[in-house]
Amino acid sequence: MTNMLESKSEFQLSEAFNFIASWQLFPEKGSYEFGHRPKSGIYRIEKTEVKNMLTISMNWVSVEDQAFSSRYSFIPDGTEQSIADNDIADIIQSFLIDATNMKNIFHHDGKIVLEVSHEITPRGFLKVTQKHYRNGQQPFTNVEIFHKQMSVLPYSSSVSGALVKPNEEGIIRHHALTAMEEQTHMQLAQIRK
Image 1 (cartoon, rainbow, N blue to C red):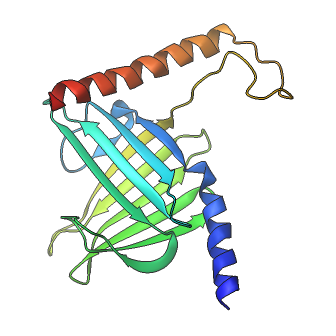
Image 2: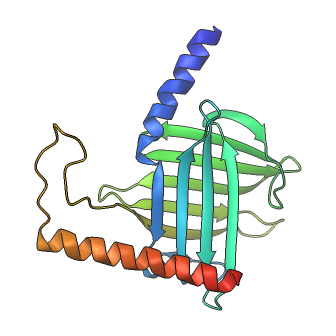
């Protein structure tokens, strides 16, 4: 029985491959029912050294140039797991629904306080929908859209790889992505100083 659970968990984690990346926020494409639209942000989903565990790290800069960050780790197997040092929740449940959908549910004192849905859209964007629950009030929903940060190599990544010739569109896209990433890091560095 244990081997069956392990293999199921491994299979699910392999489905998380599409999510594992560094994602850059499109501030203008999001919708916010609560709070203000961030100026910029990075959303990173990584596989950790702990077997079957993922970590989500978020860094964003507000329109007032204040830097914020958050980080949490979980195993996407549907079990309830404790979260250490988190002001919002003490328990997380994560479900890897399929290769393009993942849902994290946060609990505090036995009540659901936040649901975060991750969806890889047909265009390859990451859509993060955060549904916040407040005591007895109507829940509010914030939706953010991210694009995957990619480095465009001017050469094949292996000896047997196909010949890669950068075209004008690819070069422009690479420069734009690099500029946005550098701008975010510069703003974070300035705020930290």
